Length: 92
Image (cartoon, rainbow, N blue to C red; front, side):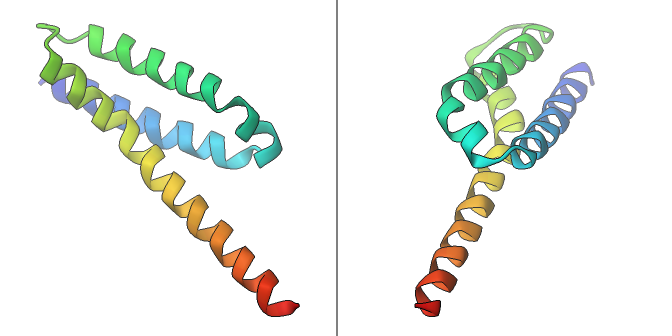
């Protein structure tokens, strides 16, 4: 039960972190991608450390829970960017 709570909390963290990432302009996020990744990894490892035993499978599950919302968000951002590019090219 404790592990499911941790995974749920990490998933919610991923959703909120993705939302924060979306709210910042690309000029504020793209040059600092490494810093965004470091903060996300740190939060995930700290969350994973709360679960015992600390096994590789457990850490992988934690990264999947916290990273899935960011991966989906990145795909959405890329699709929007392609849509804007296509719109721009049609307008010329």
